[in-house]
Length: 271
Image (cartoon, rainbow, N blue to C red):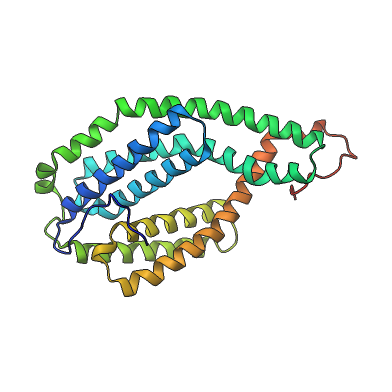
């Protein structure tokens, strides 16, 4: 659980609304730092880092939400969700090309079907990236100013915030317990492998992981260190499972199965 160099210094007696302002400001700075490289180069790692920054910001909003006025909380949730969704399609294609099509082509470099799939995937990925960049460019005009305005007027927000009289330490422990309870319920729903349930479990696990990382200074290490380690391990396993589900969906989008001859050989790694 290495802290980010720019993470704010939280104290156990910090009020939750004030903690939100500090954490959210750091989150917006990370998002801003990730946006510039995306506009000037096409590197999948840049997008990956932006998505991490967005997950961290959304985890902060979830964790501190009960201490915020409903209007501001709902705006942060909505705007960050919209931004995250704008990046998801491109990231899916990047992972598909790197982890499914790339290894398959290394095994069968002369396979014409694989070559056609790769071309189709790259075309769809590039089209999705153009749409994403347009959304990200618009983000800087709106809603980014509204989010910064919320932070600039935090004193006023804190006066109206529900539950702001609580100490951050007790508030944070309650939110972690809430996250664990939700995660257990989602894990039960995902036992039979339903794709939507597995995805929901993975997202909730990531969210709890980032909540623990953000609030680590005010949480008991003996409790959160072991939980964090377990979440990271489970996240890797669920990530492989979800990536496989997405790869099958994208492969189906690229393939026109009816156009393939009946005696066509199976695709490497497509089973």
